Length: 159
Image (tube, rainbow, N blue to C red; front, side, top):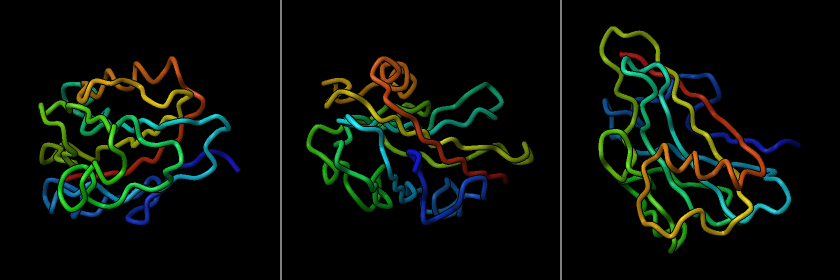
């Protein structure tokens, strides 16, 4: 099987439930993955909205996710669970809201359907960076030099 990223909350291409948006509880959705490439030592995750009026908007990022992990529980991005529960060296990305936590979909009203790309990188290093916080865009750039594979899940949302 191929490296894949899924969520029990929504399927690829489906609408993200309001619970995981700014209109709901704003919890990060539960995520799970399977079949990472051989040699994977850690993962990095980013969530981007390329449909934002000002260009790609970054909602969330995590890095230094332990290589043996295959699940992120609901709310780990700020809310119910703590990032420390998924690893002591976890790095949090500073999103385009200026926050180091998950901020769910919040497209402008009447702007149509936005596509939220949950991108997971399998990396050949145990730690992408020792910095506790990097800009979400910098996480993805740094991941490219250590990339073994990439999995993606796309959810949609509109107001």
